[in-house]
Length: 315
Image: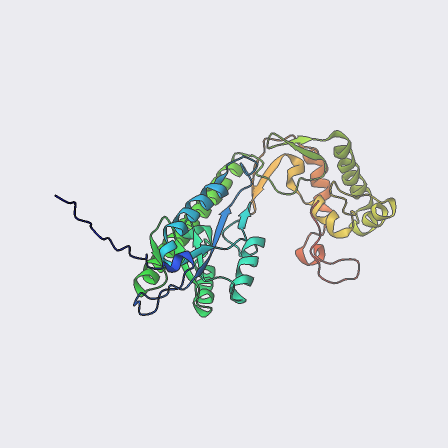
């Protein structure tokens, strides 16, 4: 009994467009267009950015994995990285975002991939303007964790809904922060900002700086003697006197100093004064004597040496 010989025919594998091969003639498989994908990441604060694997890295890793899953659709990452660390989503003034938008306008990007939509912007108006820009240049926007893109009407509708809630959340956070600041000021706590001359900040509290405090007392005492902010300002400018930020103590700065209730140990919030946690530099008797001689008005305070309106630097 002789063994039968079986002839086998080896088929040549069909070309895969994702492998960069041309489809053979007669093949009906459509050629997939390459889609250049840019990943954008953002973190509001700089905290933790010095770690080996930070929030920006985690966002990028998720986005790159998503792009890799769409390889059959022709998706491929561009070499540039667009990472904004320490920038708020409430503004478009971000260096990496500006580079991204420039590349969109020059036609170098087809798809923008983000971890969440609020990484691109937390402002509804800014976000809608960005999406309009993307559509104008034929760029698709994709959010990885929220599973939609702007290719179809349903995706655009979902996008608008999510942006509305992101804006709502941002406004709620702002209200909570403002309420916290108001409550803290009522308790006399220092809530940041420009440190007044005569103090320094330690552990988020105003601590008296004795040398600068003595300068403040001298200014108040001299003002009570002269009864003229103009003459006192001339003396201070001639002497080269400055505040802790290096601003000359001209008339505009002097008016703010002479009317700053922090020097009598008070905390001020939206025109209301509360007992402060810090020590007073000026006693109330000297303060009353000084304020009687101070022709305080916003118009006078805002005029510089030339008589024009100006915004004086902080004290």
